[in-house]
Image (cartoon, rainbow, N blue to C red; front, side, top):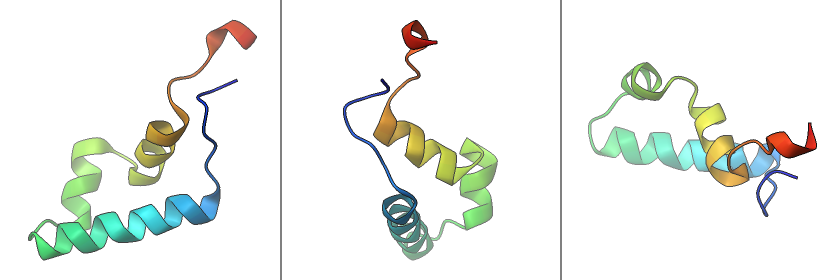
Length: 57
């Protein structure tokens, strides 16, 4: 099992909306974020779910 918390698409989408709104207010573009971390969606999802649990595979 990965992490103790699961994420659904809606919660990740809400966090992405907030992330990009806050970034825009700080003068940071969505492109800058994507260049720096890759997929914002995947980064948020990984932060919520934690690292993969390789023992169960």
